[in-house]
Length: 165
Image (cartoon, rainbow, N blue to C red; front, side, top):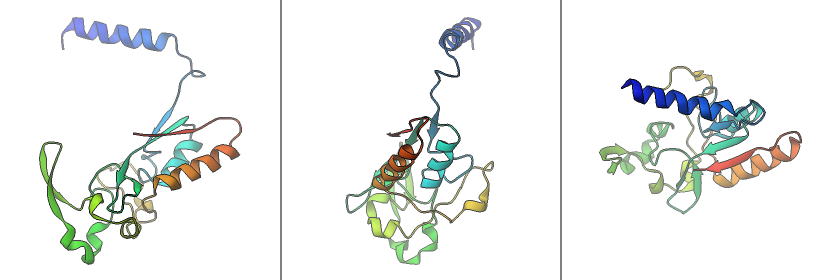
C-alpha cells in the first residue's frame, strides 16, 4: 500500500472518530452475538442485546412454502445438522452461488416444518464455545420480531432494533 493511501485512510479514520464519543456510538450485533452463541438464533440475539447492542443485524431466506426463516446462507450444511437426516439426502443439489458451483441442501427446497427439525451448529469458527451445538433451532423472522418486541418493552433504558439485511 502506498504511503499516500495509508495517509488518507488514517486521516479518514481520525476524522470519522474524532467527533464520536461512546455515548453517540451505535453498536450492531452482527447475527446477534456469534462469538458466544450460534449465529442468527434467538439465543444469539439475546446475548447481543444484553451485551449492549443497539441493533441486531440478521439474515433471512425464503422456504419452499414461502416462510421467512432467519439464516445467513441459502444453503444449510454450514450451520445445521442437515447431514443427520437421511430422509433429506435426495434433496442435495448443485447450484451456482457467488460464482462457484456448490453442492448442498438449499433452504428453498424445504418447508418450514422440515427446517424446524434441524439444529444449529457452530462450524468454521474455533473461537466460540461448542457447548451450544445442537441446542437451538432456526427461528422465523416473525419469531425474532416477536421476541425483540417483547424484550424491548421490558428493557426501558435502551431501545433495541432489528435490522433484516
